[in-house]
Figure 1: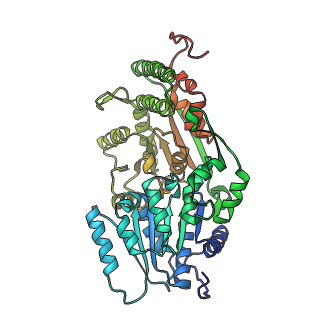
Figure 2: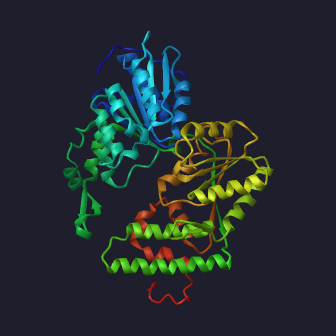
Length: 493
């Protein structure tokens, strides 16, 4: 993969760490064909990937580049390609939108279009659409494939992973990007590295599992620990560049504040009753020798729903049971907006997002929302409006939809609620604390006093994965919601 000698002229000046990342990336692509850019959110990993594609275009003439990403970052890719592509490189960007049939038609048109001059041609598509368009994308024969948020393909057997593994066979080079911390589960490396270069770990998933993990417990399928960690790190180190935001950039100070919210007696009664029922249900499941991991997390999520102000009945109907955290958020935001500040509110549950939007609109306050059902193009428009239009001071986002968007117009983020994924929490925080932020950043966490919220935020503050902690001592997570004098028997012994 030598190619012709070139002198690459950056359009935008890179930071020293971006130069180091690009140099290591190009070396790995020449040797192995694949590389992982594991840079913290907001440090400019997309720029490094774009520069790599531009160099490959100039050096080898490889011009068909496919980017697979979650929905929200696709608009960012469009902006970044325009921002960083050198003036001497002609290019065109196709972002596949619309229904599956419309996207298929777009792909056919792209493939059939005459090429009077060679252009660096980008196709941007989200994961779900890429799976549906798998055959058409393979027929397009991309020469470079970039997988954004590459941890999305950590599950070896998932459809999105199989798609990327199939594409690797035709792509001349492959780049994965992720701002999520390196996985503690060593088995999560297998699938991304099969995409980068399958010779690193071979093709046998079974052999890899038993080389790097220790199994036992229930039916011998539970991971008890890991082994050969030094050997694994030695294998992956040449194919990744990892840097934290703290080492890469000089960013403003971060301040974390925890705001205790007292539940009303009526809400507290519902919470305590649900907590007792949850403990009884989990204990019964243990007697039946059922794996309880997902059961515990589901029961805790139901308690979080109560602290957020609602419950779901067996038919899925939502009933409001309180408004304590909603009232606190509206009051906080009112004070911040009155002082001319922009605010981002992060929610786990769609119900609380919609309820907050309704309350703000009732006060004639302009508000933007991003959640799972919002199409990618509309998400991008809302992001740009929030960043540039002073009229819109409030953005509410669902935590799972917070990937890859720049919201640095705000310097205050309110966590209405969080889920149990540390990577979601970190990614959300980084939406306002990244390159371009000039003000001190404040995170306000609304915590139902004496509830599961306390435990969740303690774990997140310590950067611990909640799913692991819960299984080790699940009863402790239900304790705050039940007074010890409430006849709970031996639950705390």
